[in-house]
Length: 143
View (cartoon, rainbow, N blue to C red):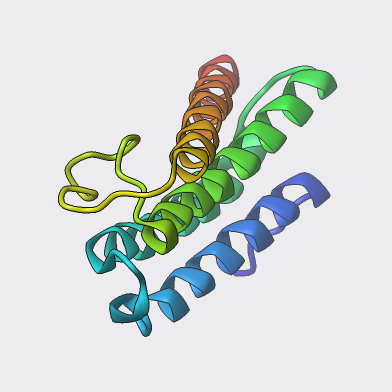
C-alpha cells in the first residue's frame, strides 16, 4: 500500500531524504575535516535529522492546524534541521568550538567563524523548537 502525501508532506519528505543522503555522503569524508570529531557529529546529525523529518512527513496529515501555522511549522522544521547540520558542518570545517565545546575540545577558529557557527546553530535550534513544538501541538489537536 503506497502512502499518499500532500504537497507539504512531500516537500518535508524530500528535505528529509536529501538530508539523510548528505549525511551518508559526509560520513565518507569525515577524516578530511579540520575537526573530524565535529564532522562525525554533523554526519550523525544529518542522518538522524533526515530520518526524523521523513517520519514527520509520514504523520503530517494527522496534525490539525491553521494554514499559516502549518506553513510556519513546516518551514521551521526544515530550516532548523538543515541549518543545524550546516552549523555543525561549519564548525567541523573551521575548527569552531564555542557552540559545541565537547565535540570541539582542542580546536579553535577565528572570532568570525565562532560567531557564525554559534549564530547558525543557535538560530537553527530555536527554529527546531518552534517547528517540533507546533508539530506536536498539531498532532495533539488532530486526535
